[in-house]
Length: 258
Ligand code: CO8
Image 1 (cartoon, rainbow, N blue to C red):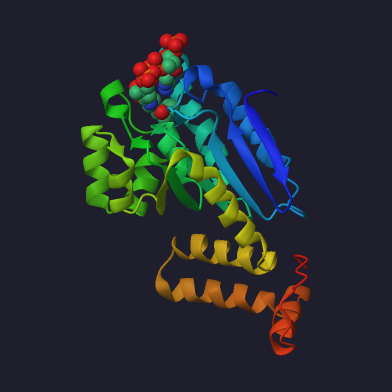
Image 2 (image 1 turned 180 degrees about the horizontal axis):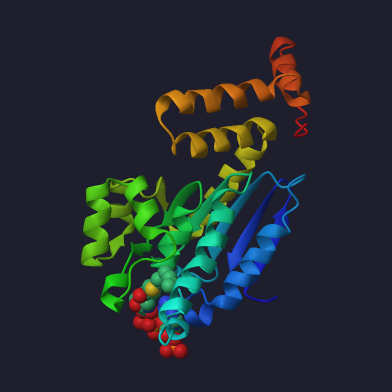
């Protein structure tokens, strides 16, 4: 282990991709370690996750171009699957994930941020899908998630032109929710994570699942997904605690994820 730092801070955790000598580019070893770190998260105690990059220059500058440069077609497809499997694990992690994008988020870096539930960034952040300039397509979900997050036309423009965009444009097109000075980014992410962690985890997780699963189907099916998850919250400790606290005019709540 050495490419991923993982620190639990009370009810949330901070996962830092740590390969600063290559601007945190994702090679196979980084992806393997990221995968193992996600598997090891204690979901009984951690209620939100922040993903960021080491240093003040780069979040993740993409997949490792050196490692990819001599791949065969089959190896290229396998490398794409490797990244997609890890990113999908991140996307479907039961707890909310906040990407604190602290600089370059290019190619696989933009793609990993899009696998998170929420993106906020520093004012020096740069987003882009430069792959067509390298002779490949985005391969870690970029063609799919960018088109779902911003308009399909904007996604196509960014991907076909391989043009990088700065933080203010990423904010304008809805790719990030907020932009902060570098030194305020992590504190803002931690404040958001702590705020999420104060709410009933059972309900927060059900909301994540309802939104993610519901977006994949038509509205008739989507509202049934919501109904079932809504119903699943009842008779739980957290539902009784949340409603009990309101009825008793009590501020403190003891949510247990049960
Ligand atoms: N891969 C490998 N090494 C990298 C990468 C990368 N993506 N990005 C930066 N580095 C390395 C540089 O080679 C350099 O190493 P060294 O010091 O040994 O020469 C070091 O990081 C510092 O980088 P620079 O000197 O280039 O720093 P600059 O400040 O001059 O430039 C940039 C910063 C603009 C971010 C520049 O490094 C750059 O353009 N990087 C590449 C960005 C890019 O094209 N990313 C997309 C890669 S493709 C991709 O992500 C596809 C994902 C899907 C894969 C699917 C597989 C099939």
